Length: 143
Ligand code: CMP
Image (cartoon, rainbow, N blue to C red):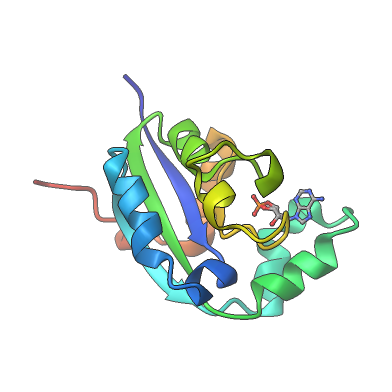
């Protein structure tokens, strides 16, 4: 049993569609625990830095623009195999390829406006968590 932490974002379209509760319900139903959360409206510089790994991709500028159109909610999820569990709940990046019952299949409008983001590996999770949260912001469950 590996207890992991992962970084999750409800993107501007997810917040706009009032899906915060629905997304959290799916996380909690799967046994993932929210141990840190914050709402913020990303600046262009923040979105550019967060997605720097995609800087050379043709969709980078549109992605940065979209991520700054409205507030997002970032959270740290903790649980058994949290990185993979979270990715399963989200579904494939492209909602057309996402399995039925996943967040993206159920709610995403397109590959760009795909409601949620999740870290793809352990090292990325560490980096992405520290992008949004200081150590003191993280509240491991004590009960
Ligand atoms: P995310 O998991 O946040 O990681 C990068 C994001 O880029 C992705 O979700 C999509 O929102 C966005 N994106 C836009 N176009 C593409 C594409 N062709 N391939 C992958 N990601 C894309």
